[in-house]
Length: 99
Image 1 (cartoon, rainbow, N blue to C red):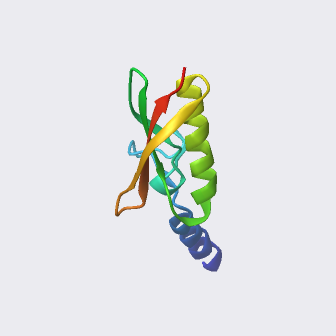
Image 2 (cartoon, rainbow, N blue to C red; image 1 turned 90 degrees about the vertical axis):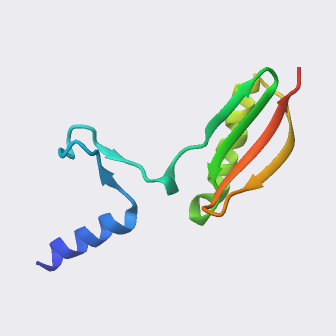
Image 3 (tube, rainbow, N blue to C red; image 1 turned 180 degrees about the vertical axis):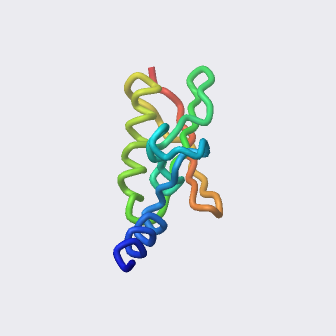
């Protein structure tokens, strides 16, 4: 009984959840927002915006991955022109690709 309770609490704390299909094995475990990877919000011309979660233990890791994503999207060099933070912990980085 204690073992089952400990496992349930660990899953709750870890942020993992099953897919919404009712079968946890079909889609595997899905990462919650806290562990989500940075993503491109938009990329038009030389302008790029990337969002990432800026908080907790993953803060510096997520920021580093966001910078790597900007580098990949720009094909090399970029210049950061703005940063903003949302109340929920999301951060946004606006950049211009340098050619």
